[in-house]
Image 1 (cartoon, rainbow, N blue to C red):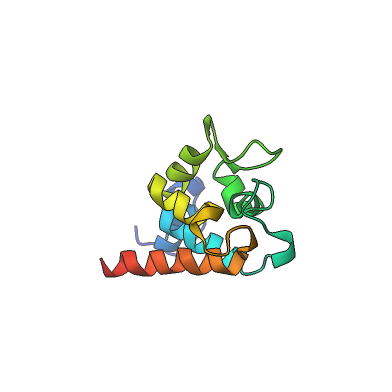
Image 2: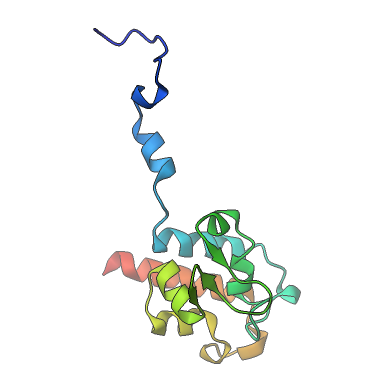
Amino acid sequence: MPFDGTKFKDDSLAPKTLADDVMKAPMTGRQRLAMLADFLDTVPPEKFSLCGWAACACGWADKIPAFQADGYSCSGGAGPRLGNIIGAEALVTFFDITLSNVCNFFVDSRYPTRANTTPTQVADRIRAYLAEQVQS
């Protein structure tokens, strides 16, 4: 019987589009990093600090609803958490990066401006990493 556009009695049998599947697919670490970089561009520099979890890039990532939906949190001063995984290991897992990358993105001593590092500087470093990975 050809598809005539009528409703299916069981919606689970209805044809799905590729867009339906893509919308439900979990984000990759690269997509999460790109989303974080874009979000960091909106963070006021005076409310940002790489010293301490709450005001750093990891703490601001907690404000992204898609990250919350994927189980990421960083609240209460406890640092990043992904289910039972905490700290830097949660960032390694969530963003699918190495511990070295975590340090390069989120540790103040890895920036010449240290405690005065801006959210845009972190976003730019993340984007440079993503661009480099595409070329590799």
